[in-house]
Each structure stands twice: as structure tokens, then as C-alpha cells.
Length: 335
Ligand SMILES: C[S@@+](CC[C@H](N)C(=O)[O-])C[C@H]1O[C@@H](n2cnc3c(N)ncnc32)[C@H](O)[C@@H]1O
Image (cartoon, rainbow, N blue to C red):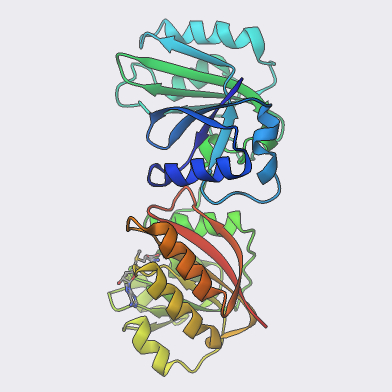
């Protein structure tokens, strides 16, 4: 039997497991050592496990790595040379090290310490995603029962080349929502062009509008709540201080891009997007977060998709690492 650790949002662990089993029914769940971290086993190679998503990422799975060793640690500094010794027995010296810990608060050493001891010459935060072999170490459990899951694979096999699927962003953002837009642009490979006219629905407080302005776009920000002060005085931002439902009746512009991060029930948000499609140019694109706060989220998602298909081609759906109880959709208006 092969084993792997797969990562997903703690809120979507059941959906991630379902997604795996739909393609690979022989996958068995073994344990959830931490929220959103699943240990699974399967009667085939790790390469086959992630093959279905090599060219198109799944919705809920963020990252996977094979588990070749599971080692109990003592939570003391003697763990470090022991880990080092274990790794020398099977990992090639040129493997890129990725260490992750779900127990930083109880560990008597940090993930960075492990990194420093095992691969002192490798940067902790590499500027480029690794392309070769990756040595993954996950430290998890509790202070009394600390465990290291260790495995070696090719970066291309892990669903994401980044540690735990977390893209490293260096650009500052005004609030956490900003990471959602940065991650969506990277995950969906969307190139934005200067001068593009963007409609930002539910723009307040304004991280998305700020990022779009930094890329030279003209933004119409529909926001019943106040926006950041720098946006209030920016001539490239047209503020519409009202609900999206109200602006729909007044809108006379055609946009190149619509973004929507409104905290609205999934179907309601989808319904509004369909109505706004007539203000999006033919073939124009949209990025929206679909909120899935309720228990019946699969039903909400299916219903929202059915609505959206009236006006859009759904290009991608991804539960991004920076999403909370939501997924992000990349849409293109039907011609
Ligand atoms: C998650 S916040 C958006 C954060 C924003 N993307 C940013 O970058 O700062 C959700 C926003 O949706 C707004 N909102 C909720 N319902 C709305 C509606 N019907 N019309 C317009 N905005 C709405 C809320 O006022 C709130 O500002």
C-alpha cells in the first residue's frame, strides 16, 4: 500500500476526500492528523494518485505528498539529528526541502530550525517554485505525540510545487481578501492589462480595488460600506456607494472584467452575476467568490453553477488556499 498526506481547507475535508474517491475509488482514509490534513492509503503509486489533476487542478485538494516514513518525535532538540539521519537514508541530496508544521505553538523547535539543520544551503523562502525533486516533511500531532510524515516526490506530482499548496506572495495587500485575488490571478493564469475597465462588486474595504488600481485599471467600486481613504481620493476609482442590486438599475457602462467578493448567499450572488453579464463585454471575464457557509453547500454550489451557465462559461472552480468557506470561480461571458 502507498500512503500520502493530502491538504485541503478544514471546512472542505469531506469534499476533498469525495473528489479523490470519485476518480480513485480505491483510496482509503486513514487519519486526519490535523484539520485539513488527511493521511490516505491506496494500492497504486503516488504518481497515479495525482495524475488526474496534472493538467487541471481539482476544486478542493490543495496539495499532496507521498509518505515514505512516519516517525514519532520526542519534541526535544535530539529530534533534529534523528530526522537528519533518517532523511540521509533515502532522500537525494539535491532534493528541495519543504517543511510544514501544524504545531508551531507546542514545538520546542520550529519548522525553520528543521529546515536549517537539514538543508542549511537552501533558502527558507525560495523565489521560484521548485521544479525537481521535493523532500516534504510535515510535523503534526500534539506536544505529547508529535509525528513527522516524510516523503520524496517530483514537484510536478504534488498538485502544487509550493509547501502545502500555499503560494508565496511578497506583494503587500491591504487586508486578507487581497490574497484571494492574488491567488486567483495566479491559479487561473489571468493576465490583466492596463486601462481595463473593471467593476468591483462588494468592493469595501478595498483590497481588491487597490490591487486592480496598482495594475493600472479603472475601477468602478460598488460598495455600500466605506472604502479605504486612498481609494476615496483616487480619480481612477468611481465609487458607487450602494448595493449591487441598486447599481444594476443605474449602470450604463460595459466592463472588460467583473470581480465579485460580496458576502451574499451563493445563489443570490450568482443571480446578480447573470444580470450583470449584459454589462460585461462579449468574451469578457469575471472572478467571483461563491460563499458556501451553509450545510447544504453542494446544493448551493450546483444551483449557483446552473444559474451562472445561463450567461457564462465556467472556466475554473477552485477552493483557493486563501479562501475560507467559499470557492473562487473564473468565468467568461458567453458570446
Ligand atoms: C469580503 S468583503 C469584500 C472585501 C473586498 N473584496 C476587499 O478586497 O476588501 C464583502 C463585502 O461585500 C459587501 N456586500 C454584501 N452584500 C452586498 C450587496 N448586496 N451589494 C454590494 N456589496 C455587498 C459588504 O458590504 C462587504 O464590504
